Length: 157
Image (cartoon, rainbow, N blue to C red):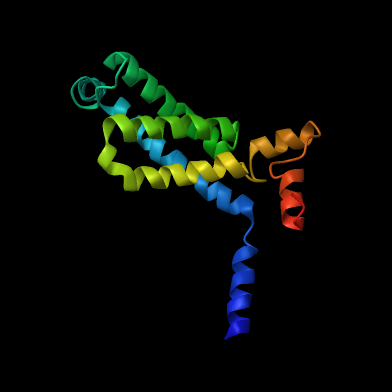
């Protein structure tokens, strides 16, 4: 039984981070992409929501709606491609915080899932199956999880 559990653990730990990061990028990207599409689908309804329901402080509803739609339609493309992944994850974490704090504070179970996906991408990077990885490699810099990650794995931080 102990050997079976160890083998199972070893199999799970052998799943490449690149695969897991791709799933995280797709999952988080889909959430924001479809939200952006729904805003475009009925712009009048979107503006009405920003005026009457969302009511973000300091931002005019029309500006906030355009800003949200722009972020939701551009960042998923970057995220899925793995281009500027950490910066994109940070922007989406900020948007998630604004939604949680000012718009739907009772939806924290959903928002914490979004934040968890984005935090992994922010802290660990997009993985080897990304444009970021290719670009870092081409300019001769270590990929995400470079020397610090290697030191941590060896127990030398």
